[in-house]
Length: 321
Image (cartoon, rainbow, N blue to C red):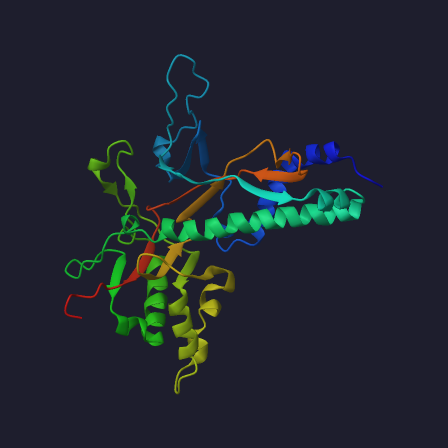
């Protein structure tokens, strides 16, 4: 049974197809755990992650002034908004020649295979861009406080090459760091801006702990750990980060800006896909008859500095080194 071209193109433009494409994106996306549907506020084109914390019971009120037309809206809960900038807003496109497209329209099974391939190819292109973008969001010195050897405070460490060549030192730093972050502290986060509209007022650190951690390793560091397990007198089980943190919580990538490894509260990175009312747009190219398909995902994201995290970078070499 031949499917009508216009009917198929109308179906492909449906919001359901947009959502299905995003499910395909997320299923193959290394950082899919950071997509968030809650704690998000939409204000026009702006997207914000809303950080909340408890109030003292004596001050409790559930009146948000939402229904008071005589006053401006004022929240009476403890809340700080974190702006999530637009990280991805591109139009991805696929071109299909007329013969292949007409063949796909000849049966439901052929069209199903055609649609699946279209969604997968588009999702792959989106994933390539996202997997380049997300590490740059995370591996940014502005997210951390450099460790101070005098005060013994800060959450961004710099170590030399010898440190990162030793799997035991790497493992000890990660395990010690995970133990530290389990206890509530204000020492391992940059905090939140006291006034989001006036950066000169600085940050207020938060008392928080991290029960669910994500380990992010540069590929070279992960390889050092793996290969180190084959040395003599090394307890290979002790080097098994997946056993300590869970396989799904150990990520590896080519990290930018000389970052080597990080321990992150799973809430530290927030990604949000904007809702859309349409899926793929399409256009027929005349006179060739090629069919063009266009897909425009919009994704916001940012690093939430109020949650505990630890990061290790490779120490810059001096001029004499």
